[in-house]
Image (cartoon, rainbow, N blue to C red; front, side):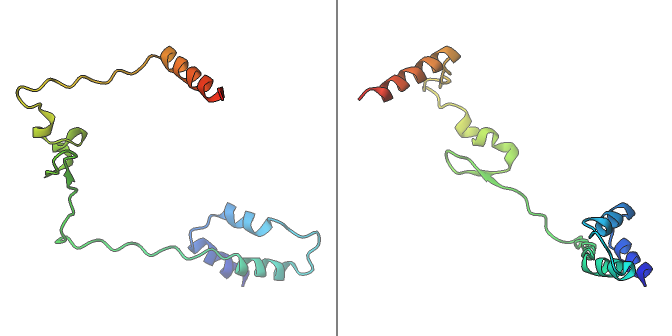
Length: 125
């Protein structure tokens, strides 16, 4: 009887070490009927059944492709055609316009000085 219950545990993907730990964890100081105790633990702590293997999709199903939009003009396109979220027309500057200069990141000292001055302003009434 106990072998059958233990075999059901093993059928559900449980290893022998896990089965042993599950049966021996939190043992009471005295056990009146060892067979009854083990039977009860084997039935009460039975792990769930393994999920069925997923069915393979039919080969004729359509594959969903990811489409993105340009963040400036909304033109749709594949992700490879929209680096940084911009299409080719929005990435290239219009003729006669000044090139965009990147924003300068303040040095570490400047940030600390700015934070210090903000703290001083917060302390003033």
